[in-house]
Length: 590
Image 1 (cartoon, one colour):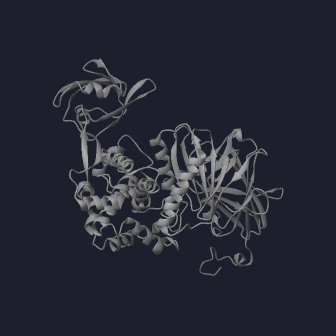
Image 2 (image 1 turned 135 degrees about the vertical axis):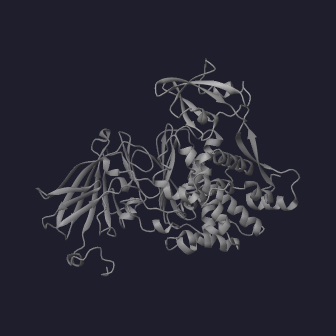
């Protein structure tokens, strides 16, 4: 280590390199407590700093993992060492000049998600950021992790390479430790090979999935994405799948991914397709995000937010490809692709916040908005996943139409991989725009200004027309009120009131309990049918409990709004349109 890269100036660092060894036990899994022990040897400094990350890469929210830490102690042999807490996630231990010391603590783990920890009588699952301390100055040191299962039949599965000692694994550095979750238990484990490299699928939980069909389709996704980027950038890959009652999500890693899905969500084709889109999304991330990543995420700061306006590309472009990849893999056909695309466009068009929050701002404010939804979020925000997907669609169609399908956004991804991803060099927003412009061979400053940095409506039909497609709005049957309601603990609760809607103008608020229309009881599920009995410009009396006060509001309904949007073939498409569509989707449906 050169002086320029040394983490501290203390000369003892040049004479001693500490060894870092974590042991993770779970002697009573029913308590949801992981017992973590950190063994340090050859530690050269009088003060040991320990910091627990506040977030994990890939999930852009400060989650305050330290809130789950308890029973912190530090000692050397039998001697207790003084320690103090400096901030919410920062501990300091006085080492008393001993070279070997031990720190122990417990982590409460009862949140089953892809970004947290979960431990119960059936299994243990953890993410490194939510369990292990970072030792400032020693992030590049090799770290050993030993797992002590509570029962002999529990196995340990992770993408980290195994050490010689049983249930012990090696992480090259702290980033690698954070990037490799662990599954411990009696999960099903399937081995398969793709393009000459070993892959594993670990499944915890019961459900109606067919593992061999799933592995066959996962193999197709791997092959399609590998062809896009010219090969696989890993030696081994692990899919961790958790089956739960009502759940959906994924978190990407360099050599693995964590997935969570509803246990009985595999029989219906549309639900199975959605799962395969999730797989395609997280697997695509091993290039886009884990290796091709914004400059702000080139080196992770685990203590605070890492701001970037480019999550629209990292997540939104990945969302566009998670629609395309299953199509290219033959998992579903072009009609299904357009149906799925129509659903995404419908969600976008029916989000009022698209007219308030620019896409780049949505990326930047992910830390305070996307994962912290409230009653006004739909009016003030747009997801960078969703609008980023829409912008990526338009850019792909633009490039294809400009170059007769001889170029596409695939070329953008490959160039980003070659220029930034292969050597893991972070890109700036300006560099990303430059790469897209170089593939398109045109100045896209106006496009970026209008659709990424501003809130101008996306001109879908302008970009779909060269492919023989058009976006058609289908109106609701009932006049427009502007609320969403749902049953909640026996009460009918208004969950959302659209900005400038008749309901908002009248004074109805999110959180109000819906009681009656024109003195007749109404339910959330029956609201739509009741409104069909009225005409635009009719004034109705809506009765609610507002903050426990019985209120009746006169509401004047307006014209019906679109309920969904459909991407459909145009009448009498030209040969060029048919050729363009075939070049894009691989089959003509015109």
